[in-house]
Image (cartoon, rainbow, N blue to C red):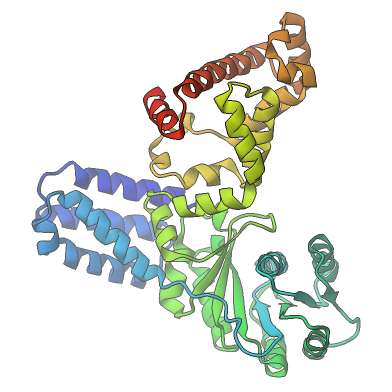
Length: 441
């Protein structure tokens, strides 16, 4: 996400870091480039003007002129002002009497139904008893889509054919109250454009159930139009938060940067993929770090903690120490990594990854090839790679749809890794292993 903007800003910052001192003209030249980068990223003009003005005012002041590294100080100022522009993090309001009702609104195609499933999964993992309500009887298969998500999550979905959405919402909340549910999520109908019928229905639902949260689901890839949509909905229903979807596909980032500042409505969630676990609570510091190419280690660690099996990790460490790491273990680790999401997203959370040349960046297709090669081996071959003679390698290449050269390359890399692990294990102790790994790389 934000690839284009991140690269443009990185080029500006590299120019600043190379200078021992920064004159006012240096700052002005840099701010012109920052302004152009933000406008090309489809950030609202007013937001850009205000942001660049604040950065320039601080950058030509004493906090930069007296700094030991003026270029780094300007980057720090940009980071701080970007966080301010993105707005503070606000959590869901789950206080008050149960059930708390969350009402999702938005245009057709914005991803409301998937967002409802993601929220249901997230809240259930936090100990809430969740009910989904299909308040979209108009879109073909909308109800069935929500029911399918409910089945996958083991969450009940309420729908009554012929009942108008406002009455259905009220009945569902009453049912949830009697059934001891703590959260009700309303998946309301969308339209291809803002129309009076949609808005009247949303007002009626809102007045019937008095939701604790009204979340506008917006496709972040539509850029500044997202701001206009948010303004239109805000005039009709009291929006309490934004759920930005398809953030992983937004190479520019304009909507994420503009929408909070222009509308005053806080961003509460980001949708980072199609999977039901591809949801993040909004955090401006983490988002600013990603935009500026600083990575997001905190989110990466959280994803790893949710994905990796602790018992398996301990067992793997013991195997590494004894130099018993096999292709079977390697395959297991590959599959664990895949659960964390697309590799490009995972790698993007590491600081400095944006500086790697394009041909040095790992892509998901390479992992698929490696996985196919290992899966084409027999269990005995995975455990004992010394069995892999020429004929076996040809069979593996045919079975995996790769070449013998690719199979040979993987086996060679694996043998080198095994040797390194063996040498690391001889040192004993985690501290010595960490020291040796630093020198090895």
